[in-house]
Length: 329
Image (tube, rainbow, N blue to C red; front, side, top):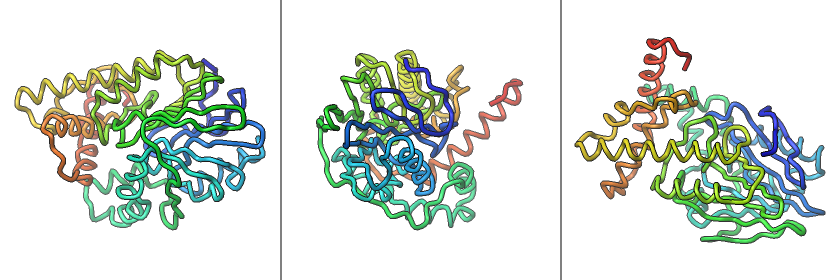
C-alpha cells in the first residue's frame, strides 16, 4: 500500500495517478482521483459543490496542467451529489456513468432538491436539524449540473493515453449503479462509496449481498493503491473490515426480521461493538431499513425525511450510550 497522509488536498501516488482527499470523510467530504497519461486525462468523481470542486481543479491544474477545462473524461462512480455536483466545472469532458447510476442522477438526486431541503430544514423538525448539521457546510444553490454523456452496463474499458481504465459496475449496492475504476497496469483501483474507511457505510439501494461481492472483487484484485470514496487510502485489510461490517449488519438485521422486530426497532437493538466507534454510526438505520425492504420485496417510495429523522434519533441514542459508558463517540 502507498503510504499517503490523510490530509486535505492533492497527493501524487505515482504513475500518473493523483488523489484528492477531504478529511475527515464524514457526510459530504469525499475523495476523487485523476489519471494522467500524455495529453489525456480521466477524473474519477467531482465533489459536493462547485466551490470544493474549483479548489480541487486549481490544485490539479498547478500540479499536472489538467484543470476543469482540460480534463478529458469524468467517471462518476455513482449518483450521490458528493461525487457528481461538481460535474459542471468539467466543461469540456465526456462524463461516463453506469446506466443505472445515470438514471438515478437524473431522477432522484438533483442539487435543487438538496437546496430546497436546506431552505426548509427548520420546518422539518428533527430531520431538518440533522440535515443542517451534516450538510450545512455545502453550497447547493446555483449548481450547474452536467449529467453523463455516455453510459454503460457491466464493464467498459476507457483509454487514457497508453493506460486502460476498466469501469466495472458492481451495483446496485450503496446506490443503484455503483462503479469501480481499475487501472490494472498501475495496480490502482478507485472504489467510490463501495469503501468507507474509518466511517460507516450506508446502503441506500442494496442488496447488501451485492456490496459484499464488490468487496470480494476488490480484495481479489492485484492492486497496491486502493482509493475509497471516503476516508484515507487503504489496503486489503481495510477492504476486509468493510466487508466484515456489512456481513455483521446483514446477519443481525435478518435475525431480527425473523423474530418479528420492525426495521426501526432492529436498528436501535443492534449493538455495533467496535464498529460503533466509526464515524456516522447512525447510518445503520438506513442500511437496516434497506435490508428489510429487500426481505419484504418492498419497492414503495422511500420516506427520506423519515429516514433522516431516524438517523437523528439513533445518533442521539448512540452518543448518550457512549457518554454513559465513558467513551468519546
